Length: 362
Image (cartoon, rainbow, N blue to C red):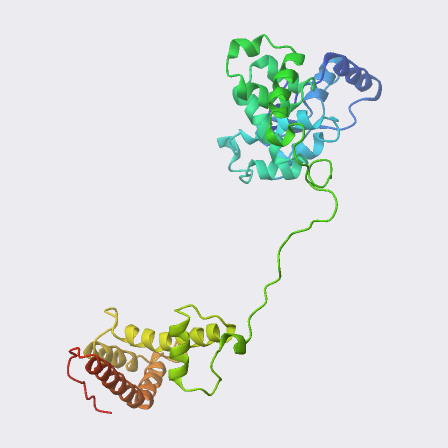
């Protein structure tokens, strides 16, 4: 009695009766040349037709056990060339495999989990993902007679997918012949804008270019005006001339040099503003908490001989931090004093109130 079929094996269509009889006659004359492969759980993984041929020929099947961890790829590699299936037939096989669970529960302990994604099956089955998706549409929306037509290569899988997608009525599908499926499918395909008569062609459409002859685009090259034409101030001109120039032309600089100067000014001013804003961020510790952290780090000394040498010396990091503060804080205090004085002066010039100057100790 033939074992239960592994789902990957069941995804392939059975041989027609005439071909199965020829296989049985060959086995009767020459014996079973290639053994039939079973899974460790006793499922028939590869060789369903040979098993049936052996039963017809009255010969005891010879089997071997699959020891790999990718049954789907194994079955594909064994059958995709041996069976001489068309692209449409192979798309239906892969579409069935894409619907399978990864493994039966009893196999998980012996076979590594394997993804049956469309990408994986497309790679191992040499069929585009789009064709696999056509097959999945046929299996999900098609009647058994339509599915059988594609399995037997009587109908193109894309035509069948478009036909069943646009004809959801099951009774109509059940009455279809192969000619009806092809007619309904290609009516949809030919109705796509890119397939209509007179539609522009591209490289994917018979390799024909969309236009003929040279392309004449009436664009004029961009020419920047010179500084003299703009009246742009000289590099050593006073700031008042630059202010007058930009007031004359509004806020849009008209020369690349002006754009670069504005970008440089933005970058330099932003770096200082970001530093001050970061210093006053609420996430930073206050002074008391800061020195608590420093003291805690200073007390940390790795015990020699009890580590692998990769432990961080936090005491050393704390000492470096204190040294940096001794060197940088006077400069920072002077800078903050100058910034506060500058803000105070700008406010005073405009008649606006400003908090008293900080007068930090530098």
